[in-house]
Image (cartoon, each protein chain N blue to C red):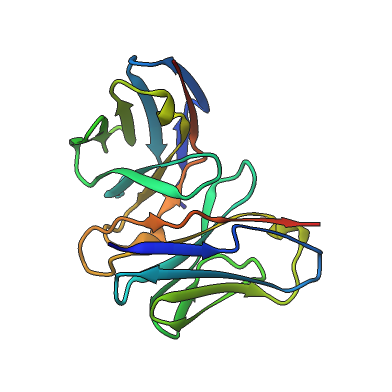
Length: 114
Length: 113
């Protein structure tokens, strides 16, 4: 069975500090991977997606970057956090084939920027 | 730009009574509709996916799509307190491309015992 693990569960960081959030998927090779962000009371916004190692597409510019160093790993990062980065970050995967794909989400990371 | 709106913002029902949630979209070429739910800022759980007009049932969850009316609904049969969560609708005009999904703000459902 496929599992998706996000870390950390929660993070409190200072404005201007760096950030790195991680996501790993086990049990599925070559998944499509996604990062989503949800501001408190806001809608879910897709940030990045990746269909293969080393390839990441940006959907929304929020002064964040993403990388896929391994087939099963997706990293979200920034060198300088802004207050507006606070929110809930979700990683998701899908099968990556041509069928109608369902997204499967991790349990999320709650980020508070002070 | 696709607009996805959900109603009501919040809904309280008694255990066992049918719960009905609505989602309207603006792009009539949409063909990919998903219902998810989120328990208290945890990960999202997929409920039902529907791609053509009509109904799609997954257990106690039934989605009903009417693209002419730009409307997709979710009905929860015999809701239980554990169904209390935020229900999210996602829509795109590209089946199989989740990078294009647009999400609603959600309906907060409370099921009272």
